[in-house]
Image 1: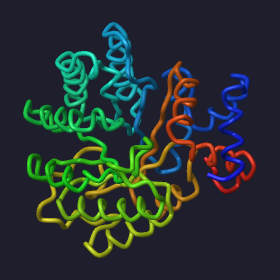
Image 2 (image 1 turned 90 degrees about the vertical axis):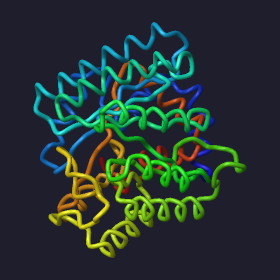
Image 3 (image 1 turned 180 degrees about the vertical axis):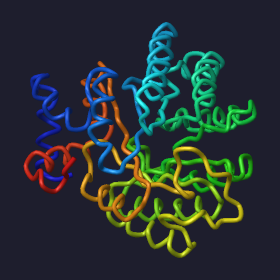
Length: 324
């Protein structure tokens, strides 16, 4: 993380809220849906599509889940009304997964069904290891209920990810749709890779496994070695911009999707690389987080993964290295 990252980490708890907000505005669209819509419209010319993510997770009462159900319905309405190329991302714990799994599944199904009726994809986000299996189970259950417009996220740092890719592929076939990332949660070395080099290797391996399994592969990484490896892996399989997906085991082409793959970035991170990929014809997607809980989101991410502090420090001190 470095000295600057540690300094940022130490200072954040005593940093005035408005200062945290000044830093966070680079990575969070704003406090409300209107803010997110404005950001999406402003980035339309950059060749990107989007995923809306309402900030908040791990509720303490089921009543809190009602807010997220309502807000995601509003988000779907906005995507339709504004005509933006976007889908949505849900965190299972925000819908009550750790309180009442049955109710959480009902909440997620309601949103996914409305999204399906409007050809909008739903990404079920992955949280820490407590809910890895249940998150995967919810995705397969939604498919069993006839909702194929939903996929999940797998974190390459986890030792179990290869097995999870195999499981999803066996159950869903070409309908498997996975966002692969290294994972923000710092898990125990008993269940996950903890060193950067090993995480990069694990990510590269998972990307190749997903491509070979016929899954729609959403490559969500800001690491140059992973992006470069992905481009080679795609080329080796005859995949690329403006080329129909050549994989015999791939699923049907979906609205708002690329030819079997896409590159994904968080808002405010590696904008120059994303724009270059888009110019080359690759489908690129930007995650647009918004919501009144931006402060809690920012502080939690720093607590969970102090390496984020280094990226924050770097973007402040050397902004040219990480343009939005």
